[in-house]
Image 1: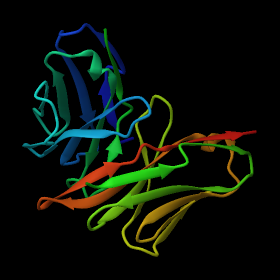
Image 2: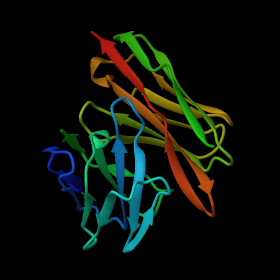
Image 3: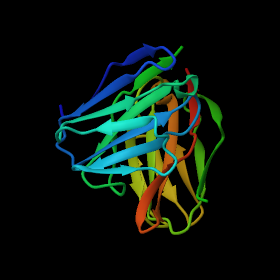
Length: 113
Length: 112
């Protein structure tokens, strides 16, 4: 089945220690998104890639970076995680940006100690 | 600023007890509205997209409707497996582009 895969599913890191989260997709979609979802809150879009074009949301902290080496993979790098970055990180894909249905992965639950 | 409000925050139903979830929005120029289901510890799963007032879509026990100010997700004769958080998201124009704004969801619990 075509799908969106995220690794790891759970990640614990220490305050200030860089961490990288991974997302891969077999849907061959052009767009990949990263969302942050804190407990009982709405998913918040951090950024998205349309092919190789990177689109950052205005309020996404500089601490969050992303890489998309090819169509199938996208990475979220948190350079110096703070306690407030503890959250579920969701990857999603779609055929075209924003207007199209988004298909989500299972998420990575990140805990910063 | 665009706002999406879902109510109630939580809803507890007996199996078979039909009800509706509400998603009200304040956006400048709605382009579409999405409904997603999210199970604990998982990513949202797409349910419906609605584009214009008066539109309705159905899937099994779920029916989504849209007006100019709100959307309803009607659940008919729910089963325990319908227990989940239901999220709505609105699509609206933003500085020449478009953006999606999610609500915080309604947590539904269906009791056998």
